[in-house]
Amino acid sequence: MDLVNVLTNRVVVLDGGLSTALEQAGHDLSDELWTARLLLSDPDAVRAAHAGYLRAGADVVITSSYQASFEGFARRSLTDEQTVGLMKASVSIARSAASEVDGPRWVAASVGPYGAVLADGSEYRGRYGRTTDELERFHRRRIEVLADAGPDLLAVETIPDAQEAEAVLRVVVGSGVPAWLSYSVRDGKTCAGQSLEEAFGLVKGIDEVVAVGLNCSAPEEVAGAVATARAVTGLPVVVYPNTGEQWNAAARAWSGGVESFAVTEWAEQGARLIGGCCRVGPAGIAEIARALR
Image (cartoon, rainbow, N blue to C red; front, side, top):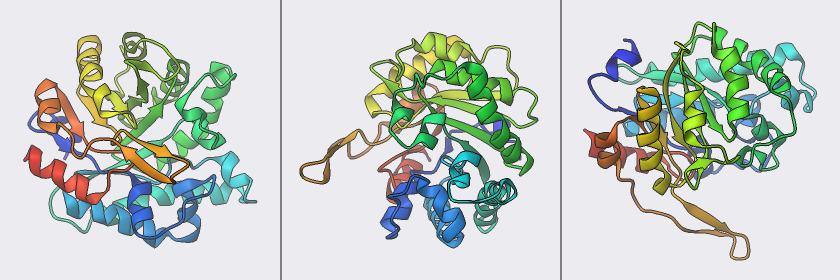
């Protein structure tokens, strides 16, 4: 069943933070490869995390390829051939989990930002000091591999900078796979400071892009981003924020944030794909699914 057609009839529930589910299961992700490390060391754990979200009510699971890259795996002495195998495995693992639940389920191959591979927090700043052509070359290799693995769509996510979005969109065009483009947003702008009108406007005329929106951003950013995305593009809007919690380094604990999302309001405003990101686990997705259905 075509996900794009489904969006005309109902809101689709996305999964939550893959890292959150894995950490709740006791896995240590303090590694520059983050969740992608488990593709190498414990793929069954990744599959179990996907399965947990599907049982909670998610219609779409996002693969563990967010931080996967040729450069990152090369630092672990993996060959290009081995890296290709792991990236493709991220899709097949998610597909395997989805095949074991009733009803249609979809797999979105995660395409994280260049900054995620740097593992220095620049994924929330952008402005990497790279040219658009350089960013295009970085993204092209792994997007081509992920597209070849047969996902239902590409989740181009947590993009902090309109310049990087432009680079990724060059690769998405002609990929043969539909995609959503999701920015990280702060104070009503991209994390790099561009207006959302400019950022969302980049998708105009690109048939492969089937939804735009935000993720890994505070919940209070959602309503404004939904309104802008709809006004600029007319496309379905995807939103999967974090809880808005802040890490207290002194106390070594999370604080603040919201206990639940205003998902019915977001749906009424025009969001068509709704889920959660960091700090939103299977219980949070179950709550979202109940509220929307």
